Image 1 (tube, rainbow, N blue to C red):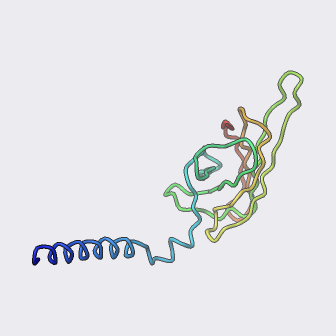
Image 2 (tube, one colour):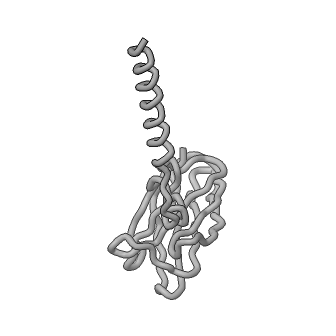
Image 3 (cartoon, rainbow, N blue to C red):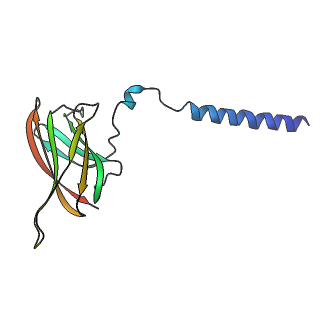
Length: 149
């Protein structure tokens, strides 16, 4: 009988420890909650003396509507507020198909230098992410190749 009671107590204690461990794993650091989830890099490159990164949850540009992040950062990786920014997805004309441009609508986030982008990419294939900025950090533009799936 003592063995059964000890076994029940041991199981209850083990379950309590697991439950407390799971409940205690949530972070209370609000600075992390204030940062946007930038996800996985789709493409990045130099733009002036900065690095620009296009990212999302999957790390892939897809055909159709989606949300992305556009981040401008300095050499140390710290986001830099560039002021006004733009993101356009460009596909040159091919054969009888006309050139395509799918512009993203950018909104600022709580982190200066990080923009949320909403865009509808018209079709799968090879695109150029045309990125530009102008503001306190100066101005710059670049074009980065990427593929939509």
